Amino acid sequence: MMSFFSKKSLVRAIHRKWVLLARKRGAGVTIKPHIPAVCVTGSMGKTTTCRMVESILNAAGKTVALSTTQGMYIGGQVRRVGDSASGRYGSRLLAERDADAGVFEVARGGLITEGMLFSDYEVGAMLNVYDNHVGFRGVESRQDMAEVKKQVVVNARKMAVLNADDPLCLGVKKEIRAERICLVTVNAENAEVRDHLSNGGVGVFLEGNGENANIRLWVGRNQLFSMSAQSIPSSWDGRYRPALINAMFAVAIAYGLGIEWAAMRAGLEHFHSDETSNPGRMNFYEHLPYGLLITPVSGLRGAEELASFVSCFPVPGKKYLMFAPPAGRSDVEIEKMAQSLSKVFDAYICSDPLSILWRQAGEVANLSAKVFLESGINIDCVEVVPHHEDGLRSAFEKPSIGDLLVILSFYGWKAKELGLFTSAD
Figure 1 (cartoon, rainbow, N blue to C red):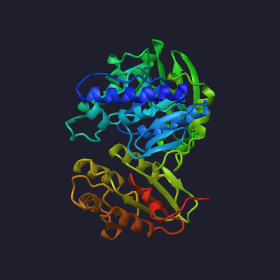
Figure 2 (figure 1 turned 90 degrees about the vertical axis):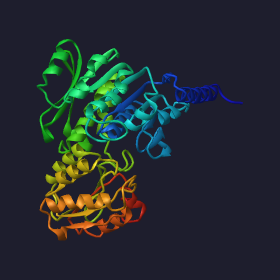
Figure 3 (figure 1 turned 45 degrees about the vertical axis):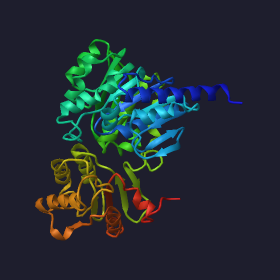
Figure 4 (figure 1 turned 180 degrees about the vertical axis):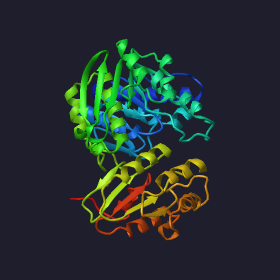
């Protein structure tokens, strides 16, 4: 006989299908999660922030339903592999009876095609609004993008978390309906945040730089939480700033959920951004004769941060880059990304991404190579290998002992599938 909880799951699944059908016909109905839930949007850092929140909730003893661009998971067990960063996929997990917390990445694509499917969830976070995807699917400016993404924080019930350093995120503040607002800033002197705190608001600051950096959460005039960059492995002792920013948002989100400080600390201390905890994103392999870093880069800001990190990364040998930017970016964006990475590496392998979308074969690879050559890179140090898997094979032929190979691709994990390297036992 079907258990009581199984019947509940069946009812939720039926309700979900009814809502999706009703929305397809133009009705504005939504799904209210029956478990504490978080929705995260932004142009950069969504997936890693969601993974950090999952790690914190795991440390708090929660079984997490997670949906991201990487897939769908319940308690760390894979339910689906592939882009699942929309309410449609996240809502599917709500029918699972095992989960007692939900963390859902909500990307631009899903918001445009289906709107904000969830309502009345505990916390919504808006990390940033960059130029990624501007010029596509009716989004003609960053302002248009902000209008799309703001749905994620406007529909939160308990707390909205906003990037106080991004005017487009901060501009949504007046539309927030949640009980509380938390402002996040890397500028300890941010006047808007200081004013927010003076009125009893919640703020998360980044104080100091590099290994001396600290994340601090304040409520009004009281500091309630502090954690050093050296205690956050994914930040590489504070050298990789995006991880610190992701951690700041994760702390703010966890606070909005009422998670204890010890769980926040433990969750971030145990999060290493490896192929298990965060597959394909800032995954560093140290067991090889050379250093290997596999990570995607989605836009100019991400490319700039990666260039800064690699520039100060100590390597006794040479630095090699396989560059396969997303095809779904404008030519100008791809050119800017390549420009920011020029002069950082000793040699470049330019490839198309695995999916070239509407572009011609070799178009992305040749566009990237053109920028590197125009930046003054010697022609002997720039190789064009359009086919993505062939590009991976060529890249792995380059490094010797003591070198560093960086694979900038959303499909860099294919290298392992192709047998080009193995993980440590």
